Image 1: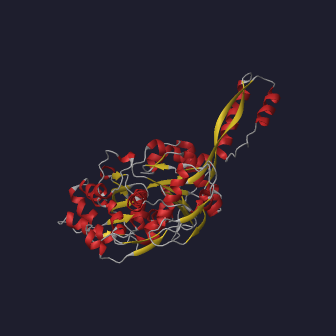
Image 2: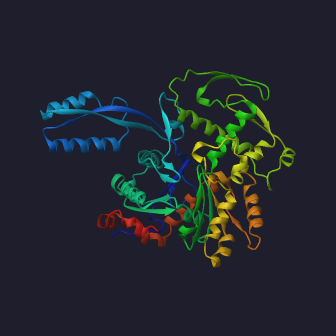
Image 3: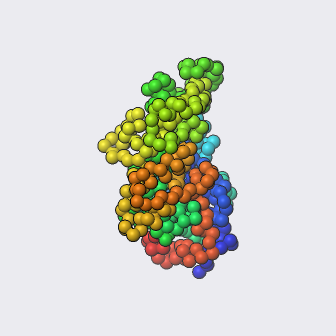
Length: 470
């Protein structure tokens, strides 16, 4: 049985997040691929024929049809009625026609952003777990073929998973790796463990603030302590959507995404945009919302900051103003608002402008409270060690000032313990902390015994993933 370990492995590491996907080679400092996890897709219905007189042929046809559905994107009209008619004539039996829904996918920064009438936008994850396996598979395929330009049959593959992932979903994951992509070896590792390794820690309290979730989990000697998991739907996308609500309430302004702008003229500050729009009939609500969220990303990165102490409007107004111009020409100079919006991460109930329907009744708490609850769920003897190694990860932790504010808030909340924060110094590395951990782990010479080989999968089946990946 082959072993995998050390520099000769050339393993691939894939980190599929709710907002961004990172992929690259183990042992490297940064992922070669970094693209949106939300993809575009067009739905269509195609007519397929089933032969009723020949059960054996009918089974073969159904198998072939299912394989075509899963193995390739099917454009509208690709599976034509002529093909169905030819199949009917070839079998000389009675045929039953039925309609099958198929999707054509558009993955990556450019492809998913191009406007197409009727195109929906969707992501593979919901609350950190895979909900759409077709999209998840297409993301892998895009990473292998278009970004890394490798044959997955020649490389061991390590992927990430949520700390609360289920055995059923892990089974589907390993089946996809070995059956669909024919990987020679596979391993799945929990996000908190990877984030800890990404900062050089094997024990610590990991606080991950991502696109749609914030979670905290204790890691001890490279293993997640599942009883310490704390999670909620509080992340960067919620902050972005609340910024849009704030702009609508305070300035009666809704951003016009780039795809809808034909031309624009300069306007004075806070004046209504002077923009000529394209006729984009057929624009879906999901596509429009996604493009607006992407516009908000630049707004957050260039203007928003976290105050070093709990928000105070008078104090925030004494800070320097920051100007920002949206793609449609609307421009604004921001004072207290640019500090108020990130406060959602620390005090969501007070600073949310409009609570989304999905969060009605949810008891949201600040990210510092998530970390404290997680630490307090661990054994008493372990708590000082965890609080002395608080690992901050996730793209939504990049607000300037957030690390200092979080450290201060934790220290004030748990005065009896010494709080020490660990996170990459550069924003680029903090965006990919979990991927970095996977890169380090998969390149270790001692890791070879942990890979699940193809031979082991064939012998023990998909259940081996729960035995070897803990």
